[in-house]
Image (tube, rainbow, N blue to C red; front, side, top):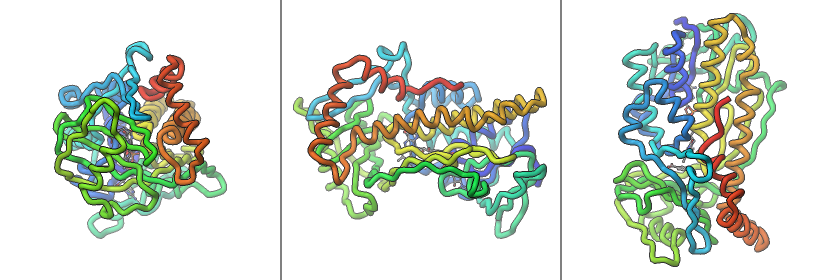
Length: 391
Ligand code: RFL
Ligand code: PHB
């Protein structure tokens, strides 16, 4: 098989890149190791920045999002049994976010690609990326039990944290910046209307909790749990009781319970691999960087990367100039590090570390109090949460 751009991975990064290239008249092939049903059901992100929403609309993938997505003009911070609302439009000059699940973004992009785009091959596992330091890059992959080769002009690794693409960069050229956190998130999906109409980020002595949603009828909730926790160690009743404790307020607010339909634990880490390019190989999304989910930034960063890359490939095709491809890594990393900073800040603001001292506990409350009482501090949070503009 031969194409112009070989894309590994059909998560949001790979799928959106294929769509953007298709609209620019550039051929691509997407290789995805899992099957379609798995990709469409994998529970992950829920919050889209304004910039992401605009990109999906411009790519022709916004119709269902505009019908079914929920526009959110703020979030609630809950601490010391009190509630504080961060009002996004008032603090940012009119910006907001959209709650629309990653599963739905992927379904919409897959449907478009299957209908109008180039090949999207499910069950095709990339085994190795070769030749990216020369003129003839190729991806070796296995499909239906046979090995095959995809030859291309460029390879893009959109294959997430566990993928093979980033391993094709020689170790002596790679710089990794990393931090793991001594806790994870136990996430549930429940068939019950969300108990609040905006997301609630709760700080509590027993640990962090988050109330989010997938639709007016489905809640998504998370609990901070110790690193390495087995999701099955928690029964549903225990989960609801713990959520009730951590969300409790002094004003009689109630958490509605409902049947739990999914349950899983996510580890938390920050990770950046630099540079995001080696020869004719480009890394995008989680393949290059991971943020802890507290800032809701992972998917939005993936979108920023592939918008930058699609623009650079289009520029190269139209003008013959590689200048935007040459600056790809640097351009993306500026945005990536802002998201890393914000995600780290949100994580350390809201979670209780197992070895936290009483001094650190008080500092957290002081930081929260500062956001609740200073417009400048609240604006800083609102600007980062709603997203920095694409360059
Ligand atoms: P993905 O989605 O991991 O997709 C990678 C794809 O590559 C495939 N693959 C391979 N295919 C072929 N050959 C191989 N050798 C392959 N190896 C892997 C995989 O099967 C997969 O389909 O990466 P991508 O596209 O970069 O997208 C990144 C986002 O998925 C991720 O950053 C977000 O989900 C992070 N995230 C959130 N981001 C937000 O912007 N807002 C949020 O509210 C938010 N909440 C979250 C999150 C992530 C979470 N988890 C589970 C980590 C909440 C959670 C709980
Ligand atoms: C989610 O709905 O899954 C979600 C929302 C906000 C976050 C993380 C996850 O910060």
